[in-house]
Length: 473
Image (tube, rainbow, N blue to C red; front, side, top):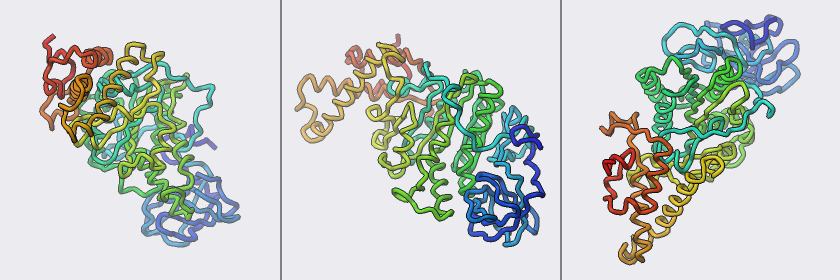
């Protein structure tokens, strides 16, 4: 019998040697009695609905010698007790290969774009182990995003894991979409987008953006939308990773892997855990929170066979960065870009907080001495400005010393300069988008912190690309 990793397109045929019956249906949790013993964990089950159709489920627990508890990936409406169940013991698989490029699919590879069935080269299990350490390639190269505040304070790494943290409505998806816009045009590889529990409207907007930029034929979009069952939303990230790993390891291509939103993966896992009757852990999260995140994050890496550039949006519930899901995610991230509601309220976009954002690449041995020194001086300037804000609000700026007044003036110019008009928001702002090289960002920032722009009105630095736009140089 062929294995799921090499079989042709289409779901693996269920084997009649392992029949069973539905013993109980509790929402999307199904208990099944199987003849001849139980299949392994993560095995796929096919439950036949008497009036037509079927429900796919995945084994989550063994509850007896012949009984398993599974989580359904489809609606269980119409599925009665006693319905037939079949399994071949193989794990759930997803189609992979070049046939997915330009397509929008769900976690089973079914098209969501109204097109024909996907022509797959092979099928891979959704749940796979991360590559062994010997196969991983350490990151050594910074990836320019063209977004000034990211390239200066939080540079992204080829082969590293970058994340955009922020609460609701502070611009995570906009930053992610601008990154895709800047990266895909020059990226010599393929892009895989995982939409985990997001709105269908956002998926449509991304699909239209990719089509408009002419890069849809190099992009695979995998969606598990809000309307899907918790099990489907929980496994969509793993399905997208299997597709990306095939491009990286089997085809030897560089892969840009984008996730929106990783917190929905955690949220779906919490729902699945509750449905299975597990006792919750801190703040109601599943007791397997750390393992659930690690199962996804440890697979996101570059190998000696291909590169992977990964950027993830992570929702911060109630703007609480002490939330367990957020703190566990921070453990895995190499470049953490933090969006601030306070910065957004002041009208500075992208609403990045440079003082809490961090990157392992912001090191003199990686970005160079000049970049590191300029970034540290800019951070010192902004940190001193934050210390002085309370004094200014109570006593006024005139009560500051001449040195502090100079610091405040330069910090304000720097904050204005770090705003940037995006290409993906041109239709809303009326401002043409700017992409700024990293070296130019460093030199322009140095000019501000060193005082060479003290004579420029600070409002002229707002929403520009480079200083040359103001000075005319």
